[in-house]
Image 1 (tube, one colour):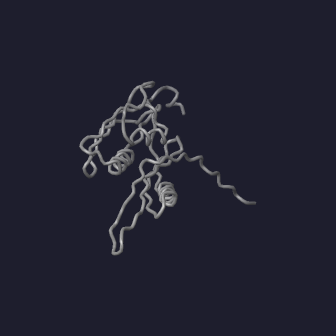
Image 2 (cartoon, helix red, strand yellow):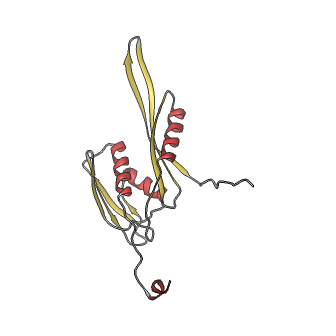
Image 3 (spheres, one colour):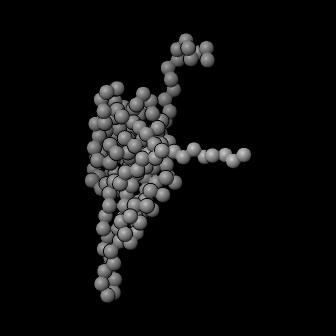
Length: 160
């Protein structure tokens, strides 16, 4: 009897496409880089960067790398479980859980990554860095540093 592996419904987003020109003898060579993100809106998100001679090739490579490097993040009532202050390369990020109904009060690539991860209430700020690639990996490092929050102890959880 064959086992069927259930394919995850992954949503894909292109964060940035860059045209890179390199001078060589006899002219210049043009390549493209694509920064892409994937997520399933259930706490899993991944980021990858692909390089290629053409844009579709770079995007495809980025998606395969993002799928391989997916991480799972803890989601607590539609927000993150605790505050995060993290420095990575030139950037500094501060993320804070927000009450239900607040929405994503963040900018840049943070909004896209949290949306793909299924987190809908967060406040945050990226300080010092305007580089979108560094900011993307900064957010990913911050999401990796999140720890699960235990449920409050009540009479129902004691009996179980």
